[in-house]
Length: 401
Ligand code: MLT
Image 1: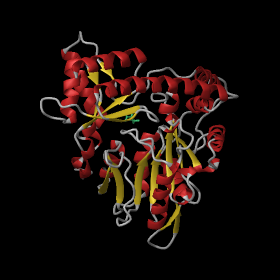
Image 2 (image 1 turned 180 degrees about the vertical axis):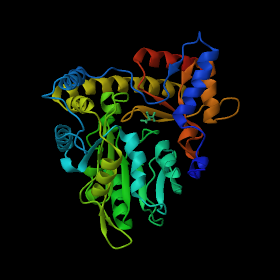
Image 3 (image 1 turned 120 degrees about the horizontal axis):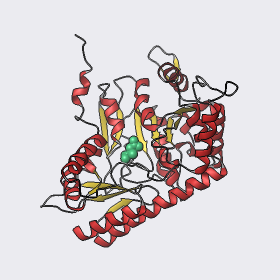
Image 4 (image 1 turned 135 degrees about the vertical axis):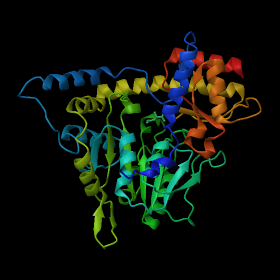
């Protein structure tokens, strides 16, 4: 009989968004005549930019002839895409070498898989509320987590506690789920703390494209010293509508190295390369062709138009909450709006609110409890729906409260 990884017993029975999907499926099966509006999982609704579609077609055509056919690709991703991403960083004032960039099938896989590079007995700091992938993937390895509270009082932006030592720190900015964004001074404080503690920051910047204020950092590498203490995960899912197409990238600086117990310096860039080349055969050539088109002038213009559409949805949601006097966060440099649950039957419990909203307005959101203890009385709506549905959802919301 195999001995199982019993750490799985410590996990919640299902992943947050699977749990939501199953509750919604049960509801739609029982109520086939009701129109359900889904503003739960952050899944985009607009089609891919035309420039990306053309590039995907070119990629498919290349596979049809022996002169241009591609088999296994380079392990870190094709040069044409890594060079393009390096240039994109440069345009935003950040220097990232193409050799520091690893192409992947998205930030979810990489933020989950990176845990393999670290031993079990680290002090891991994770904000609460938090994207559940960081927590679940550490629990799968039996790693214990120290939570740092994100609350109304700190604008959901926990800052380092100099009296607490950490080895690994997870940060996400703009934040999923709260929409909060660290400014440069705050991120510098985190970088200084990481350097003092000889710690690593695992920085998720999947929502960077939503930042419209040039003063706000879109990358941890905009902060001095970060190349010695941070890894960054980014994704085209939200920037360019790749949730179904799948492409992301992870930046592991060449300067990032730590001393092992035998005194040997270990480079995280080399370790990640070893991990990826052993366990991952890369994102398909066709998808990488499409991804490179995102960073062209026309591709970016189309992406910006789509982002503006979602930002308008965020405003529709925010305006309704403001009108109702409901306290909310995010929705400006983020596709997520995070608000305090209105009281339902004497309770602000977010799962209760989820069921109430689904049953009475047929609107699906994400209960804050799914993101941690500090989210239990909060709720998240996404602006990634289509505009008509977003308006209708908020009209229904307006009538209900
Ligand atoms: C979310 O809704 O939190 C995101 O879509 C999840 C993800 O990107 O994996």
